[in-house]
Image (tube, rainbow, N blue to C red; front, side):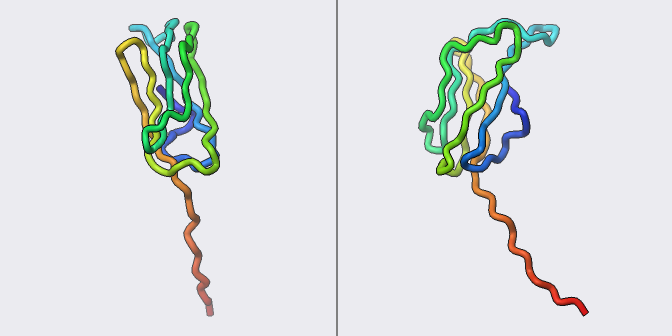
Length: 106
C-alpha cells in the first residue's frame, strides 16, 4: 500500500489518497480482488469502506475526504484479502503555525 505523498500527518478536511497493488515475483501488478478496504479513525470507528474492489492487473487508487471536524489521532487503512490483512497508519492533527516574535534591530 502506498500513498501519493507520505501520509504521516493530515489535517482535518484533507483527502487521504492511497494506492493498493499486488505484485508477482517479477514485481508486476497482478489481477487481485480485495475483499474489504477500510479506514478507521482514532477510536476505531469505520469511517470509509470499499467492498470487492478489483485491481484488474493495475494499481488500485482510492481516496477518502476527511470531515473538517475529524478527530485528531492515529487512523488506520486496512486491506483484506481472504484472511490476510495489511495495515497502514497515519495521523490526523491540526497544525498551528508557531508564533513569531518581533525583534527590534538597531
